[in-house]
Image (tube, rainbow, N blue to C red; front, top):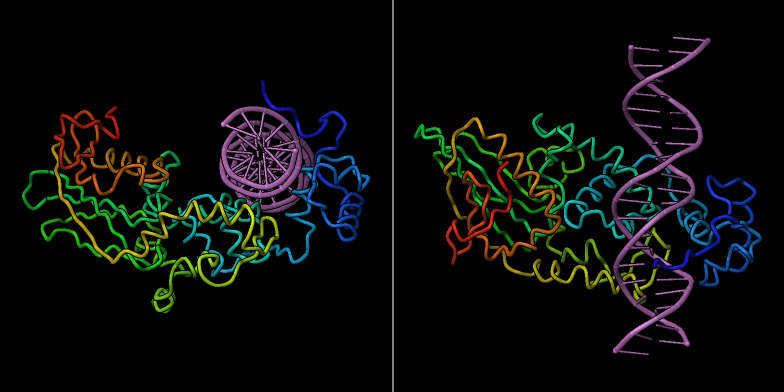
Length: 336
DNA sequence: AACTTAGTCAACCGCTCCAAC
DNA sequence: AGTTGGAGCGGTTGACTAAGT
């Protein structure tokens, strides 16, 4: 049994709001506030609307200081950085962009910004089924490098799984591990947006060096001010409070990020393997890796301290920890 | 001019969270 | 401690418009 609906769907108006309805809602809230009860509000305001619909209309359109129109490069940069690190937490992203709503940012990302970035990627990433590697994985700077050792003419592909913890904000971190000197093809599967050379070439990253100076401050203060200085206005609900539910949630959600950022930078690089049948399958595996990384919304689900190797075999892609052999491990991507 | 396709974005849906009881 | 129900969130839908054929 599901829960009771919040309103009588048959007796509420749906669809686009008329100017008259907007006026009624705005006048009511200007005069009485929301009263902390959206469900009761439409009846009091004389609106035949669901309370949720009123709330949405107010937050996304009618409340003061809403900013519509073009997003600036700076806003693009902030959205990309945050998306790369926290994913589709639109309300949190919106909280960093005064006047913007989560809905606006979500729409902007889905319809424009994502495509803008896709256009800058190598063509083999343009297939929608194989999303590009700059999409969010976590705030960690984990990455997978693939190299191909053509010099030895053995068609072996080497994947390097890096785990990096860094004191700099994710948007400005760089994975510094160079490809092995023998490699001729180098593909960087960075999981953080700014580590990609493509991303770095975008207009909103042009002043990255300058921003690295700012990186000296705590990233949590920079992006999530509730961890240090001022509270910020959420563009989702317009609140400007340190108290209440939202911030509690964020504190919980970001706990491990916070912790991670305060580690000293260190990087591990583990090489492994690969026994598969040749360079012609290269794309197959790069695509699978992309897909895996993309689907793994939070690679911390895989313990980065444990995963030391990625091993490809005919049965799939395996992560191998120190205590297990390939045979003992379960593939993280199964071979088709 | 008529039709189709693609893009945009406001609004809805269904879920989780959590305060109040 | 368990239940209820409102608030808030993110994903998705669909109406509308613009561009292309």
